[in-house]
Structures are given as C-alpha cells and as structure tokens.
Length: 310
Image 1 (cartoon, rainbow, N blue to C red):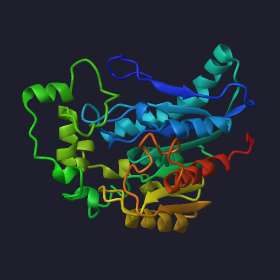
Image 2 (image 1 turned 135 degrees about the vertical axis):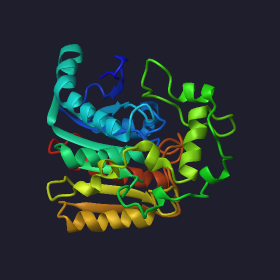
Image 3 (image 1 turned 120 degrees about the vertical axis):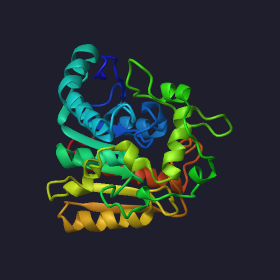
Image 4 (image 1 turned 45 degrees about the vertical axis):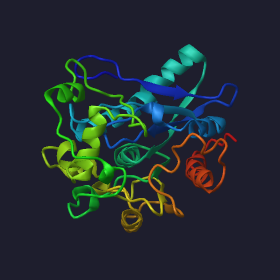
C-alpha cells in the first residue's frame, strides 16, 4: 500500500514456522485515535498467542489524521484486508512456502483499532471480530467523544496551540504520516502528541478527525445488520477515555443483539482502564486477570475458524 505521494505504508506479518497449513489470517489494527500509533503498538504476547494457534497475523499501518480524514484511515483498513486476502497469500506461497486460507479471516483491534475491526465486520467477510475497548457511537453527538474531558491524561495536559513549525511537524510535506509513536510518560511530548491531547481534552476530536461532519462514516454501529460476524468486546470497567466507556460498550452489546448479530459477547475486565493490556508485562511476567481477559478475546477468534490449529 502507498499514500497519495507514493510513499510505502507497511504491514507487519508474523507466523510460526512448522505449524499446519493452510493458515487462517488474523488482522490486528492498532489504536491511537487515528492520530498516532503504528503496528509497533500491538502487544507482542498477543501476536505470539495467535501465531501459536496457527494464524498468520497481519498488523497494518494506515494513514493518520490530519493529513487525511478518518474516512481515508477507514478505507486504508479495508485496503489492508483486501491485500491480506488477495496479494499476501501469493507472496507467502512464493516467498515462504506457506499456504494461507483467505476464507478464514478474523479481525481485532485496540481502541480506535477496535472500531476499525468492527468496520471490517460491517463490510467484509469475517469469521469473528474482537474489539478491545473500542471507540463507539461517534454518530451520536451526545456521547462523551463530543464533550470536553478532565480524565487523565488529557485533563492533566496544558492547552496547546501549534506554532507554524509545529504544524509543519504535524503535517509534513511530501508524505502522509502512517506511523507515529505514542507519547512516552516522563518525556517531552512531540507536537502531534500535544495536539492529540488538546483536541480530545476539549471535545474537538470528531471535528478534526472528520471535518465534513460525516461522523456516521466512522461509526460502524450505524451499519449494523444480521450479516455481521460474531463480535466480542473486551472492555475495562473503569475506562474513562471519551468514546470508550463501559456504558457505551453495554449499549453496543444491546444494539448488536437487537440487530441480529449472530453472537455478541461483552467481556468486562473489573477495575481496569483504557489500554490495560498494552504494558509489555501483560502476557509475559503478568499472566493474571488482565492477561486472562485478553486470552478470552483471542480465543474468541480461535474458536470461530473452522480449521482447528491448536
């Protein structure tokens, strides 16, 4: 894939050698509010778990706001699915001797990446989807994403107006940014990170992400139907990030069920906040309740492929 200037956009492809073929495909979309992030954010234990179950795991990057709108980011997510099911099987067979089963595809993601996974569920063939603390109901302008917040870290950040130099960093010439790191606690945030914190703090994210106001384009729940695949939402009980709260996840569960989605499960993680699963210890040295909740989301995907690869 490439941006509008011809710059390559990359996907990280992982698999375990020696496991059975043909292999099902798992797409994992990173979070970051469509503003920051990359495939580097995907927790290694989660990728390794799915690989151990026989999946080829594809973690694509996609173009980030503000050089494109959220619609283009969503289109990139769909393009990644199409590439993974048409071009990647040929590349893997020719280059690695690995056969893929493009009819056995699942998707998952974290935060806005969870929303992208649900978007794929609305428009492409999936066996199942898992959304970790997704951003929900953007089309409903009464929800928290459209309102100012004092929740950390956003509420703790000073207001920020980008300088011309900052804007040149946020919108560099000749490339559409498709990879950018999260702010690292204890370090000075970069202009893009400060801008992200500011617009979420002031409830301006929807207008910046989709300037034409077509928020339904970024809200897969406006496209609900009985044709959706089975969906699991894994949600921290104490998540206070705008758009990702437990009450919105519960509403999503009700609406998906009412729309006739085949199977819908909401897995609530007691006491946990947003991105509870992203610390590198979760799934390595920490195999307690947080990891067990993650495993439920991963096993949801494993259980819905017809080729059992345990």
